[in-house]
Length: 118
Image (cartoon, rainbow, N blue to C red; front, side, top):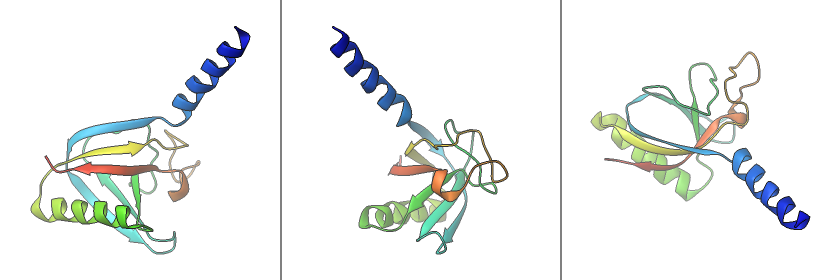
């Protein structure tokens, strides 16, 4: 029985540590591409976001290091140009509730893994 309780506690802690969030119908407010951080896009969307930190106003990041990230970036640019809202799935920040003065950095920001154009 102790063995099963241990396994269950590990699974629960994994779920808490790797929390993800979803938001709908958000307007893309600003975007910046940073080559200094191995090609990431930092951006902000309308409304409040749970599980994020704030790095100079931006709350979300997207890596451009692979084809999937570049495809999501294309969708975000299309939505921004067309002034259309987006639905986003993201992995929560490892330093939620912080900002650039007390722990938030591009490496700790919430990261987009899916975008939907409603």
